Amino acid sequence: MVNVLVVGYGTIGQRLADGVAQQDDMNLVGVADAAVSLGIRALKEKGMPYALYAANEKAKSDFEEAGIPVAGLEEEALQKADIVLDATSAGVGAQNKELYKKYGVKAIFQGGEKNDVADVFFHGCANYEKGLGADFLKLTSCNTTGLIRAVDCLNRTCGIEKVAITIVRRVADPGDYHRGLTNALQVDPAPNHQAVDLMTILPEIDATGILVHAPVTHGHFITVVATPKKDISKEEAIEAFRGHDRIRLVRLADGFKGNASIFKYARDLGRPRGDLYEICIWEDTIVKSGRDLMFGIHIPQESVTIPETIDGIRAALNMETDGARAVAQTNRNLGLGAWK
Image (tube, rainbow, N blue to C red; front, side):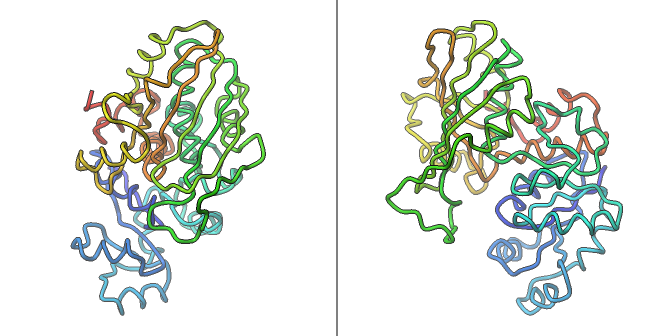
């Protein structure tokens, strides 16, 4: 068993803790945070299923004043951990890196950090072997993680020459109040970072794209136009997607009208918080234009990076040297593919 510490118990950190706790070869040392957030209050009300460590003495005092049990300071937890999953706000992880180095602990950072925080820009499905033994990994963003799953799946099937993407990006997570976009769409300059990041992970593919912010919260929507090196039929693409345990094919006729339908379905399944680890591709959107293949993807932004982060633990700690076997083990423990 390897010992894992989650630092930052927010939107991603809560889900990372749950994901690690589901692994049969990992032990969750606990979670660390610096503030009495709603997530921390909920942790207490649930009976403290995970040990809580305070980021510093002030945080420890704040937790105790709020009646929240504290197992100790973060630096104490670091001495028990083999690897840290840093899910702090963008920029904080880079500062934390010095602390991780001090205690000789490996770390995996989320997509909000700059790429130079890590030795390897990592995606479990697409470049697992590059992460083997690395001290510091950085995950791709939620959109890029889901996008690469789909493009890498096709690339392994028929080879992909180039892709052009359009992202309709949710403006904030459910419950966030720091962004106020209402009744408006905001356009970012092209190419968007997801296209650039895809080429970093899959350098053989030429990618470009446009990003549009929309006033919604339940997921992103990406359209992809992929040019294959070898012609592939719609049916062959569907077969390839169906064989991928981190991709769920959905249909309009079955009631999956859009992002809200998918979120509701995840809640109906009893998934905690309405989470999905899978991306969803609408069969109805898979069409051919000459050799080009077009399709639409739903990205559940709060939970999509959890499987790839757990893959990163396996790679960094050399728990499994074969990427396909590592991904399959993560999938089994998270129940991915069991719905097929």
